[in-house]
Image 1: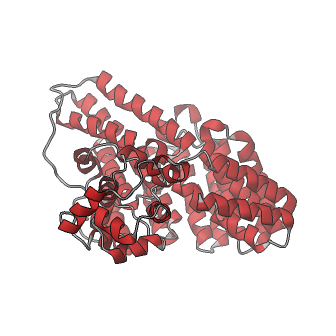
Image 2: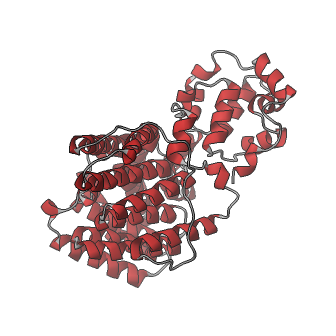
Amino acid sequence: MDASIGGGAVAGSDTSVKGRQSHPVPPDAWEQPEMRAALASREISSVYRLLRKHGVSQRQIAAMTGQSQSEVSEILKGRQVMAYDVLTRIADGLGVPRGYMGLAYDEATAIKVVGAADGQQAEEDESVKRRRFLAHAAQVTMGAAVFGPESGTWSAGPAKTPAPGRIGMTDVRQVEAATRALRSLDYQYGGGFCRDAVVAQLSWGQQMLESSGTEMVKNRLYVALADLHSLAGWTSFDTGLMDSARGHFANALDLAKQGDSHPLVANVLYRMGRVYLHNDAPNDALKLFQLGQIAAQESGSELAVAVLCANEAWAYAMMGNEEQATKLLGRSKDEFARADLAEAESWVKFFTETDVYAMIGTVHTVLAAKNAEHTKYAIPALTKAVESYDDDMARSKTFMLSALATNHLLEGDLDHGSKVGSKAVDCAEGIKSERVKDRMRPLQVEAERRRNNADARDLADRLNSFYAA
């Protein structure tokens, strides 16, 4: 939790001012490759450790950033800093160009679009946050509070910015085109590469909610902005900003409902469910997938139903329910076979035959962790997915390479598994995504377990270097 990181020494204190004036950081420190990499990934613990190597003391770091020495010490030991307001205070205090940390847009934009910073919500227990989102999702999907009372406001209400007087379909199409372009960048390079651009685009797009236009234009605008909020949520998730992701997805749900788009409601619920899967909360993820399934079935989209079934299977696999996992995988394949891909809504068209194989491989990889027999199902599916993904889907390909390598190691094919694992690292090094690092952890664990083998040991060493970079 990083809410308490904002405590300690007051930024405006004499000590803080004195620390900023002395500038103990060497002028070229921020330009060195190792430091630039740490800043780009917002690994503040690495930034502080590198400053210590430059002779900057913990006391000096605390003075410049407005933190207590105990907080600086905790960060040096690995405590993560994710709140936007804390990151900007650290950047400004140390004299780091905000763009080096992906904080280039101004604070007003951050408040307008992201709402409350991650750190402002961090004191609330994560399980409570998940329950609040489930309550909100249930209200949007079914029009009733199933899991609890009104979930409350998801973002702050700052002063409104000037908006265009009147909008037409051309304006809405511009938002849609920008979203498509930014989503392509996310697929290829990761959320860390394009999140700020998504947020800035969203700030501009939201101004049009104040504009006049025909009912048809306004409804399409709701859906376009819902999709853009969904992308903002996904890129926030990819960079580890979980509270921001939750806020964007909540806004996306509201706008999709206003635009009467059941398929997009289903898609947003699927994406938020994936956030919870990633954070080892399969029970809560399953509830969101099941809510999404309601919206998917109301939309009449077999493809949307297939997506939700596949992800429900993933949740059941994580819960150890092999029977339900395999049953839902089968239903996902059946629904996909019946789907009219040409007529599918744009936000589910990403789910191609390649993704079907990817989900089959992913679910069986989870099951293989407890029962290695599942490698015989995972490996063929993952191999097909890897062969089909091109460079435009670099992040997805990296996920599949990592899972494929893990299965080969579990199966005992250490030579081939290590070669595939090395390819996964090659791909991962070009992607700005915290999620990629997290998804590759099982491969690191399996490689470390087999250090008595030279190939596995080399892979483990390379993975350790990748995480230390």
